[in-house]
Length: 385
Figure 1: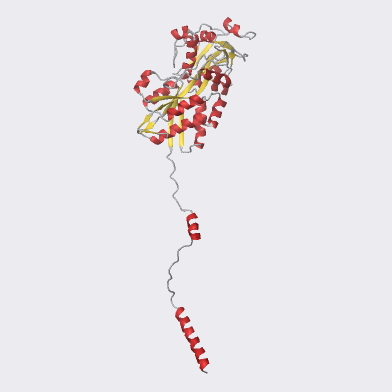
Figure 2: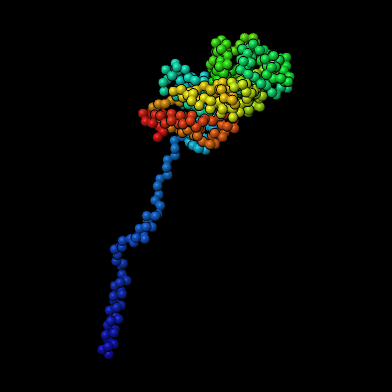
């Protein structure tokens, strides 16, 4: 009996203790995390705010029609590289582009014509940057004639209105076996201030002292053919191309891309080495190589009448004109420099230029341009690091 009472007493005590434990839970002290839990916490991604969108930038330029086809293509390609940058370029002629940047109405200008000393004096921070080189080609519209060869003196005399008919002996001598018509020659030329005209007249002046002294070299000249009623003007390269296409027995001059895209017949030329050449990638590169060291301190050079065996003789660089100092919108300045750097170095940009008939910059010239870009400042600080 005594043993039974002891057992019952223990059971009752245990039940009482369980009853006490079934009340309100007591707080417990949290244990420190294990090394494994610390590693998991460190590996868990932390939520960070999304980066702010880049500022939308619009760059406005205007100027030469010489590079307009490639600039149009580049400006359509570039948003895939920088989606926040929009680039507008209007082909209004080199003279218009120079005036626009001097007036402050554009962010950059295109020009095949070189700035003059008085323009640099008015705005000393202007800088010309070679972007591409291109050929200026004589184009013609003579029904039934699909081949024409000219040399410098003959081309000069046509544009001086000394040779006024297609069957002139000077033309016949260069084109044996070609049926040359007894028809007057209409000379198509630019009606606006033009870098293409400056390149073309630079060539005529290089091969003829008479042309240089009596007609001159520049963005615009007085065309002798107009004086005898056999001249017609066109605005921009497109205007001259259209004038030749719509005028039988005419001759004019345009940048190679316009002749190619419009399927206009182009004359071959006898170059300075005495060889017959046509305008193409090989003959353009040969001309550029002949003047590889011709750049002056302003980063400009003329490359007409090159002495190379294969050189196309009527060549020129096309330039962008920019400001070297900026005190307003540094984001816009950076966007412009990035665009220029892309245009002269990107493989897809170069391929598009070559497809259109332009010659891309040799590596040595590209290095000069990139070095100049790294000198541009905004608010006193270099824009590109």
